Image 1 (cartoon, rainbow, N blue to C red):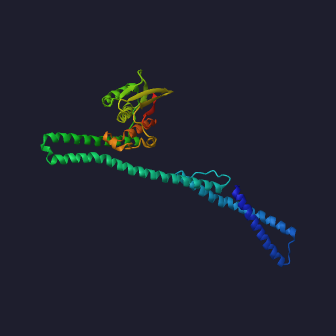
Image 2: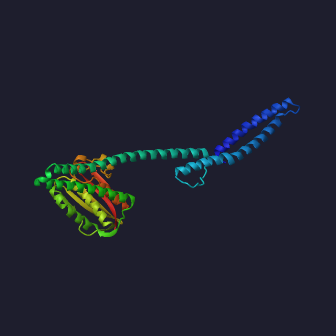
Image 3: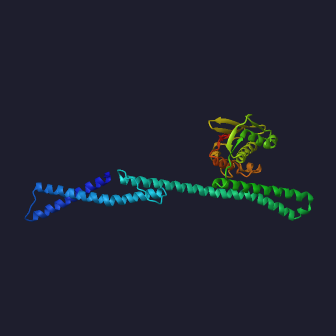
Length: 344
């Protein structure tokens, strides 16, 4: 018997027994048969026992079952279960219901807050996509209108404007391809094809491909490892990860700075670090750094090209490998991006 039911049954039985006994005593005093004090208390005790047993039985078979149904419904809907489960009843049914209702209310509040955040993110995301696509579209429109207004007949103008239009088209294609890659990674449509390969050789190959851009700013790209380091991952996708991180390092690096790639063995994992002594990132920007289209300095980022999706792609590729991207940075001193891969 639960504590609440005991208290309810006891108090109710006492009150009803006293009321009924007093009423019966008053009625008996008006008639020929009269109760003495001893008989009155015996009658009161007997009546109390009968009422207590009746109420206890009723509670067990009516109130408790109804309250248990209420508790079961709350638990079922809170856990999104269609099938009814038998909920273990504690010592205090009312307290259990109160606790579940409180938990349910907190869950709903959390869901409402998350929906508000998602709605805000959706609006911001749509705005960013439209802005990123609008810029090259307007550029193409301007070049074509110039050509139609007479520039097409001018050899010095037509080729130059057609080349500019082609660059804007290429930027649109890059944005769309990056968005498609992120979408496929999020939905699991893009299959990660893992294989054993030397990540040091891959890193050196990526650095060679970015050497011209780095040299133009006087930045040195160096891989601090000579012997092979084998990992088990998707070679093509990890190339994307390293390329995006190095491109960002060069883009936001200081002139005559340095970007270093380090490899550290950690049990059955390999830690890969891309460190630079560039402009760094303020702490306020770090939580949103891997969001789509998020830019620390929007005007500067767009001037230097890129889709604004590179770090978001890095994040999703590593998550598809069951890993996370980590970043530590100090404004004005540089940044370190790191991630782990399974040893091959």
